[in-house]
Image (cartoon, rainbow, N blue to C red; front, side, top):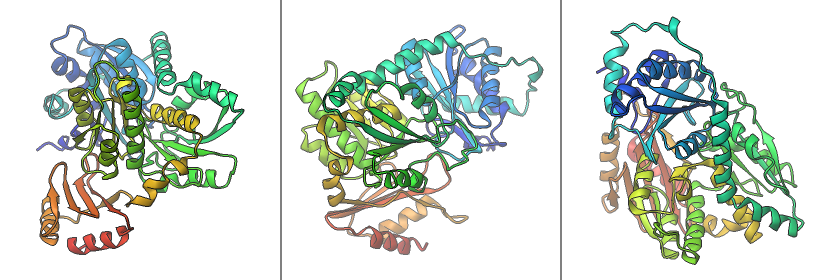
Length: 477
């Protein structure tokens, strides 16, 4: 098996420099033209990249691979992944976001939009790209002396920016929020931690569209070395700076933080407490279901796609609001496919990804953020008040990463857990879920890192710490 196989994940390419290198991106670019879009003469492909220190050189390699295979790259330069998703919708073209999302600084990757909300993954063509790249990379010499340096198509990027801002204003109901806050003579102050990723690109677009909201910048400067903390808000340790900012400034109402490519977001409430990702999904689901019930959208159903391995609070919130709960496995390809199949209005993951039918079923950190601002402005409550009942009902651990020892496998761990909980109900949908009436846990292999991911939840009383210790004992860890 080639050492390059591991770079091709379930729904994107991702790896660590220098093992992941320019040659891989060059042949990936050629593969897009010669394999993925071979049915299209001179295919046009929109391209954007994040601010990692390897992104410029990898982007150049990708662009030249596309060009030399006869394709037409449309170079958008630096942009968040959701900006690229907006570009694909606006131009009705495929595209690629060169990013490793929340991964460490030495990592990079590539997400490919085929059409609509369909992403390139191993089940629909990434395997063929992988095989093409592997067949070429060690056997065919590349002449890098002929490579051009990509120039950003500023006119096209400006048009896409206008489209993207239009979606932000639509979903965030910006005009009404501004009128409401002005009528109430209310000033809102929000801390925003971009982690030196492309959230800084997004915030520069939206910082002036509100009249009564002041955004407090934290690490908006794009810096691929991520000098302040990793751009991974799902690891709650990386939210400490944001929590401290809210805690130490009584005039800040709440805060939010983006990951490296800004397609997901996490929130910190007015008490500097982190809002659980599942609670956000439940809140958005019930809110959007109420909106749909009051004014149904033609072509859509009151359906919500959620992670079956996630918290029980989500399907229960959907049921309480007469919605149709559609379970999915982890990952954007599955969420987007189910949203399309079931005509869902919204999909959400506890990892901070939120998918909106109004945005082509794509995920966007900034759209989730402006929706939250809208909902807070409308109901006049503090963030801590909104999530008070959920916090008092559902107790959820942090996402726990378990590194296996050499020779250990997920299948071995799964067998131990099934034997250790003989009276439980099990689901092997996307990992292993173990259910009891008042508690549950989920353990699954990560799609992007060589670890197992686990979370534990109890309902009614906080059993999490004891249950985590119990699980570790059964696993012999």
